[in-house]
Amino acid sequence: MNLTRLSQRVFPSRALLAMMPYAPDSESEPSLGRIARLSLFQVSVGIAAVLLTGTLNRIMVLELQQPAWLVSVMVALPLFFAPLRVLIGFRSDNYRSLIGWRRVPYLWGGTLLQFGGLAIMPFALIVLTEPTTAPTWVGPGATALAFLLVGAGLHTTQTAGLALATDITSDHMRPNVVAMLYVMLLLGTIGSSLLISLLLADFDYLRLIKVIQGAAVVTIVLNVIALWRQESLNPNQTDPQRTRPSFREALARFMGERRARRLLLGIGLGTAAFNMQDILLEPYGGEVLGMSVSGTTGLSAVWATGMLAAFVTASRMQNQGSNPLRVAGAGLVIGLFAFAAVICAAPVNSASLFVCGAFLIGVGGGLFAVGTLSEAMDLGTEEEKGLALGTWGAVQATSAGIAIALGGAIKDAISYLAINGSLGPALDTVQAGYSTVYHIEILLLFAALVAIGPLVSGATAQNRGLQLQDFPT
Image (cartoon, rainbow, N blue to C red; front, side, top):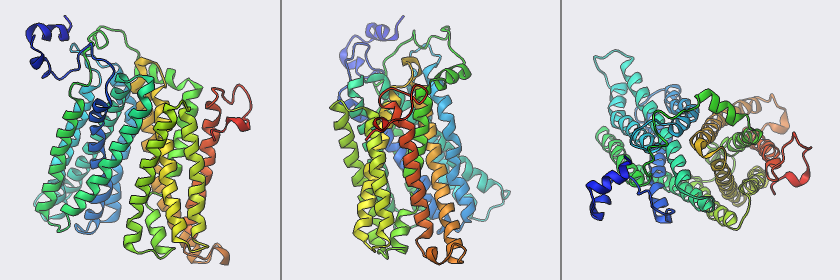
């Protein structure tokens, strides 16, 4: 018997039914308020990202006096889990259960992984840095486990959450949903960054334990609120006896579509282009343009403002009927001007031009992200939404991580050659390394335009040659 009907017999009162954790079968299309509540899982993802790549990165190197290579390995561990988002999405599509939930078990499982990693992390750091009688590998091993659990949790939560958002919304709501998801992620990242920096102004171990474990509790609370009464029960869809494809068969069928392959290539190139400078923007402003610490710190607010403006603009453009890939293409084109402004700021010594470039990077990146996620939500059949979004997330996260690492490495290598005169007198400047990275990003933006251009009209390079009207400008 359907569990919804069973609960209606056992709990005939509306008040009691409202306490059940699943959405009613007859519930109409969700309101924006319900979508905003579901988007709270993005806030928990933002909190985890800030802790892993910002707060703990700095604390482990400076306060805890750990070698930079060890910290880099720990921060990179969550990246190793990113490709598994494809499998997570597939498993949520084909989850076997008598209850009838597909996405909620993975949302909850990812939440528990995040909570577990954050709960043990401060104690793992203490074992890592303080003298103990334990073997020397216990500290690094425990810390690596904590980072890996948090990374696995946030990737699982985000993949299942995006799939659930796709399941419960119709096509005409997608632009608003995608914008809401990104706004929540941005608010979670910026808000937690400011709050954590305030709470850890006077650093000590006890305060660190309170902050990290407080983040663990907040993660549980936010994600329970987010998933409560969002997914309805569908036992037929999760029936253990239903025939299901293997992961290899489903992935081969999905990747066999030229449109999917081309879109994922464009997403990888565009994501790499916008993220390669992620750790270089503020140092560039300080080292090349002589901006103050407060001036470069304010770049985060400038970039975030550009992102918020892009989310609103992208939602409005798509509500007016604009193709999501045209929105993404507009972001790529804006990115060309953004990086050109950053490069030109050095020769003319203009901090204002540099700040304008930082703002445009936020606008371009925001338009590209919203447009490509909206398009990814339309990939595959209704039975493959988790697989499609898992693949999108895997490509995006992996491309971003590799690009950030390469950006720093390329900058350091070119700067070393320039300082030693190996590149000639014309490039014997402090901005040579930075400028090289920004020029590479411009090339990647052009490559991304070439990749997604033919998809706007529904044509592919196999059908006809690439033409000017294919570019999503």
